[in-house]
Length: 348
Ligand code: ADE
Ligand code: ZN
Image 1 (cartoon, rainbow, N blue to C red):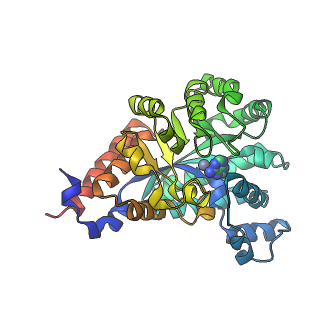
Image 2 (cartoon, rainbow, N blue to C red; image 1 turned 90 degrees about the vertical axis):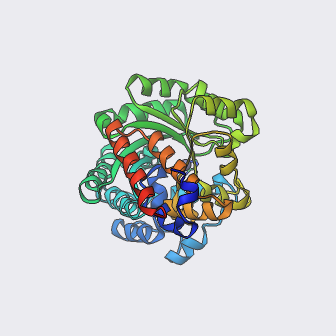
């Protein structure tokens, strides 16, 4: 069936919510809303450099990735106990379920917490407990991806991975995030090789602000299975051909890219061009508490700005399911549900 012609445009908003979707690029620390930051600061006796929730939110005006990261790491400093990590992840997962997320692969930054003296087990057990509860209470399949901070050394990343091994069954993969420019993927080749030996999935931020060379490096030096962001690939025709040929997913975060000034506005985002180039593009929220929207907001605003239609909706939802690391039986079930949603919402 051609969804392009059979699902009327006025049903697009409802369709975007109803479609089963996978959220594959969400930093759990980036889901910490100002209200929760203040509540946790009070619970833990942490002093914040902002007098109110409104003042903190007003500080969310970013000029680039680093200007965001500085405030994002400050916000994460209120997290101290296992319950704090649970509360943060549970709040996110409830929000995700309301947006039609059936699978969430959640990034976390352990070094941000262990460097402040929070034990690795506190971080992972709190997040894991929320993931287990998401399956039983929300029907959302949730899994964790441990990210290394690329502004720190590879030695620190190696030690972090070893420190997490007692909880090896609590996370499905590793990622690479934080300040991109000046920290090429090759810096982390050994720790990604170690992760591969351990049977972990591998993803990396590349080509958010950094050049196409960093995407090549993530593919060839880190052997990643997905590229997070990757929008700078559009500058390199040979790279586009490689990504299309190998069907390497790009987890694109449109609202993030606008807030961090990668694109001047959504109408000038290259997501549609990347789709047209035959790439496996997916839509995600990155740090929703900081960038003005969760997953469904990212879909709706991008669809409006780029004039995308129901055919694109189906492609993007299917790409997200295909690109996830979920079990094949789960993927098959969500693909069937996607088909059912389109049949239900089509004109008879
Ligand atoms: N950590 C949290 N959000 C990030 C982003 N958009 N890029 C790099 N590191 C991040
Ligand atoms: Zn990110």
